[in-house]
Length: 345
Ligand code: TXA
Ligand code: MG
Image (cartoon, rainbow, N blue to C red; front, side, top):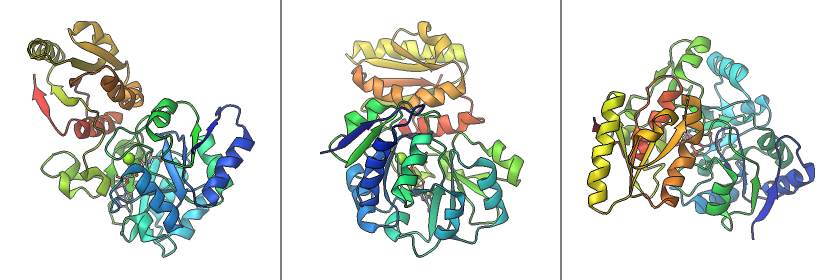
């Protein structure tokens, strides 16, 4: 049976944290909130504990996990060849929503690194996440706490509904702040490369470490099998509904989606629309506003994909967002959830 703790980030109950931290130190699995999405944690250095993560998620074992640490110094226990750029990223952005890839030391089991010679490391900023890792007393491997392929959980009810009974502990701790997973940055070659865009953008990074590339295989479906982060190759963020992105100028998008809605209705299919709040009333279908700003869109996207299933929607159309700044992370997740299906308006 899963041990559930409700914890308020603003007024942390240390006894509850200790209870969950103890589970982790005993090799068990605990779900906890972070500033990006909820994570499903276990002792990163204990192969048997890490295997329980893959089981609970139904995750392919060649997809490596991110190791979460409490202190920056722990990086030196886990990784080799920590160069100047890595140090600058750690100093400028940690604790926070960025994961760095470095060459791993042998203490990190291949079960954690998905068989790779590298390891992904992140120092989260969320108070509850930090306290839990501190109490566990070991680095914590934690992928997003969803069943493999589903949208990542950003609210307490997402983890409760999907994962209760599948793990040893769950900390319910309110909504995630950013709502999309951390930026993944590979620092093992000369030019750092973003393997997964997140709220810390290419522009943010370039101010600190100079030229940064984005893995070119993220942009197109045909190239996706070559993605450097194994996780970016899999089908991901998919609700039960079939998702499409509609691109073009705003008026064209709206009239295209309204035409398609009439067509769907005549076939007995329920249509849903994800849009900016200001366009909500312009649609004939069930429309859900993602927010007014790109930051709000990022924080609401996964929740609203789940909401579409609750409303028995068969086909979801999403407005396209500008592929700049945080928009790059939004479009990356949207493209994956749509299986790269784009309709030109
Ligand atoms: O925000 C986040 O990063 C959340 C929270 C819980 O911290 N975690 C998360 O983990 O999103 P996960 O496992 O869902 O995504 C990790 C991504 C996957 O795409 C994985 O393939 C990639 O990072 N990754 C991990 N280790 C890697 C490595 N050594 N080389 C390349 N990619 C790696
Ligand atoms: Mg994930």
